[in-house]
Length: 267
Ligand code: BTN
Image (cartoon, rainbow, N blue to C red; front, side, top):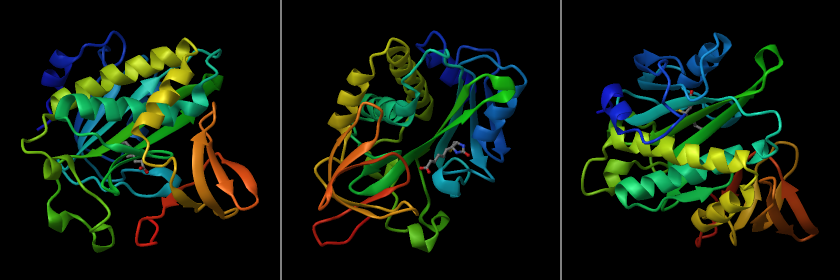
């Protein structure tokens, strides 16, 4: 089970998690909302908030993030990037890379990255990222939220999600050490964040390609504005998904995609 002191003792970072403001809540609406509040009160860059459960956990595109007690790692952290950092559009991909690397380092499991923010294993979702940019008082801040499924009971999962999600303890022989995993995630996030600040986003995108389960696949984008069908070719320097459609190449900047499986269904 998560323990803030043990997490802090395992940290190998210089900024992320190295502030006096880290918090661990038994129950909270959303750790992202809490970090946004702390940011407004002047919390330092690197502040991390964890919770055992969230009552209003938020996913991308206005969705709810299922957050029963101790079933997932629910964490959010605060970044205050310099104005000059131009790499912000790739933040979600960068955090995906960091998280996939951390899971690999701490469990030996290679999860896949599904554009734009999903961590998957065997086509099932194991985690997601919600990076929110806010500008309180004109300053740009980023709240990075991460949900990783650790240990679900079957009866905690709504029927419609039944075969769509998986969790680390379902896939591992031993129980996942969430303190060590959270500390490693912070370490890896600091690494990608430093690379972003140094303008080394190409390196991050190369790592993303290595974890991708998206590139080379037949996909359909489910953006409300328009439907795009085709082959996912690559990601652009600013993190857009490049798709070869029947009409030519298109770039997808937001929304969501579904990937075609062998039986022809999309998920
Ligand atoms: C997604 O896949 O849609 C993103 C899910 C992000 C969920 C995490 S859990 C911790 C943090 N707090 C929230 O309310 N959301 C993020």
